[in-house]
Image 1 (cartoon, rainbow, N blue to C red):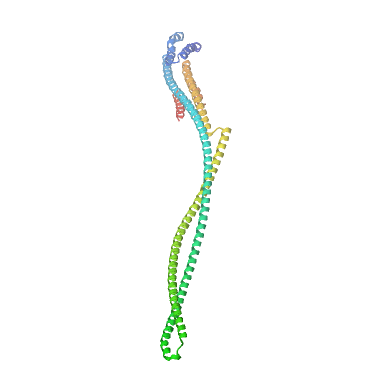
Image 2 (image 1 turned 90 degrees about the vertical axis):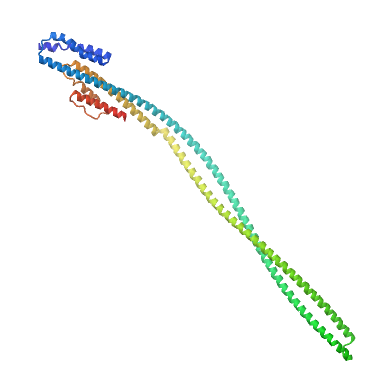
Amino acid sequence: MQNSKTRRPPLSPAVYTSGQVAGSESGSAASMNSLVRTPTEGSPKLVERRSPRSPASEKKRTSRVSDLESQLVQAQLDLKKTKDLLSSAESCKRRALQEAEEAKKQCLAMASKLDETKREMLELSVSEDERIQELRKLSQERDRAWQSELEAVQRQSSVDSAALASAMNEIQKLKLQMEMVVSNESAQVKQAELAHSELHSLKEDMVETRRSAPSWKRCGGLGPTRWETSCLASEVERLKSALEAAEMMFLEGQVQSTAELWSARELAERVRADSEEKETELTAALREKETELRRVSELNGSGSEIEAQLQRISRENDLLRAEMRKEEEGGRRVPQPAHREMEDELRRLRIQSEQWRKAAEAAAAILSAGSHGKMMERTGSIDSGYPKLGSKLMSSPYDDDDVDEGSPKRKNTTVMRKLGGFWKKSQK
């Protein structure tokens, strides 16, 4: 009987194999329930062939069947959760692919923007060079204009200085002329005084002569002769005419000297006023020229600053061109850092999605294989399926925990925790 028991149980695996084919074709939970019911339906035939069993073995068998059913239900729940996780992984994969496509588009857009920026920088550098050349020409023209203006101001100041010197010379000459006029006037006054004193002495002589004439007549022969008297009378007349001429000359000289003195004074006043006016004008002109010279010197300083700024801008443009050439050469030799980062991100997303897919497929296959193995081994345990699942998940690059070799519930919990870890990492 013991040998017949060991030979006859292989009939149930054949029945299970046909049920497994039907279950693989349908692929639903109803087929799994039919697999659970199939051994119970075929059990009366097996009972008829076997020897009658004891109630203890029947009770034990019933408890094992109930345990297997509960484990199968738990496995189905785990399979459902795994399918949900697989669908979420597929959605994450699709989202990652979409993000990769968007990253590609952004990379292309960035490349186009970079090319456009390079073109703009080249255009800007060209326009900046043209602007620098124009500014340099303008600064040179302005420097030439300032130089010519400075030379004109210097010439005008030299002319004004010469005019001022000539005016001062004229003033000195007029002063000398005034001194000469004053000295001539004093000499004429002295001559007039001498002539007046001489005239006064002649008048006194004539008066004395007239007084002595009657006494000469009384004396007779003692007095002068008629010829002498006529000579004296003619001399008196001559002296009178000379006196009148001297008085006329004195008056004319006095009038002339007075007129010359007034004209000299008027000329001196006019020359002094003209000189003062010209001096004020020349002083104002000199002040204006000094301010213009200061302004020109300041403008020359600002022109030198502008030239230094232009040189600095040209140096910056040269450095910018050198950097652009270096960037272009570096872009020809190696990919740009942004492109490399995008490619690394895409590669990482592809690897992650592939690992997700493989892990989910392995989990689904192991869970389905484990549930079928439980039905095949009624009298045994179902511990043979879960170590495979643990080994598959242990080979995943995202696994950090060890699979416990304990109860099936603990193994299922470990599987779910690992899949949850996959999900959290994909969300990050």
